[in-house]
Amino acid sequence: MPLLPSRTSYSVAWTLLLLFIAWPLSYFSASWWIFFLPFEERYECIREVQEFLENLMKWPRKVGHAIVTSSCHFPRPGPDPIESLLATANPCFAFVDPMTISTTTTTATTSTDANPNESKNTSIWCGNN
Image (cartoon, rainbow, N blue to C red):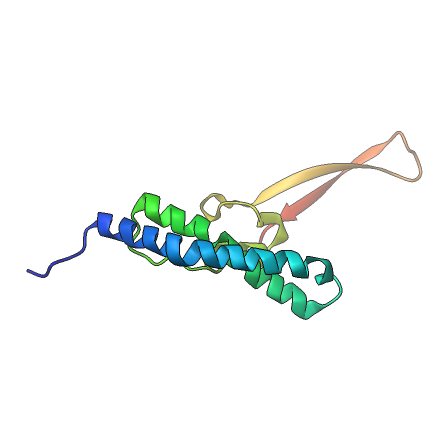
């Protein structure tokens, strides 16, 4: 029978990763992130560098989650695939858990130009046709 590592060994490995790689890299990238911050709006290439540095700064959070859950999957220093899909797919669902997405209809009340006291309902639908 092959010897498989226990979940505790994953927590120890992620703790070593956090102490010797993730935290120092996060501290290093934070100083450069602060340095490039004023130039982000002016230059598009700086904005992409800023996003990369921000992902490196957030990496210790993911490693900490892997330590607590004893995850056997490597905590990647980039954005989560589900999170990036939700941010670009439909702005109505950008901050919604993918397991709870449902089609919703909301009603907004607007006043008409002819009679300011009269209002009409407008339906706004978020979702796929």
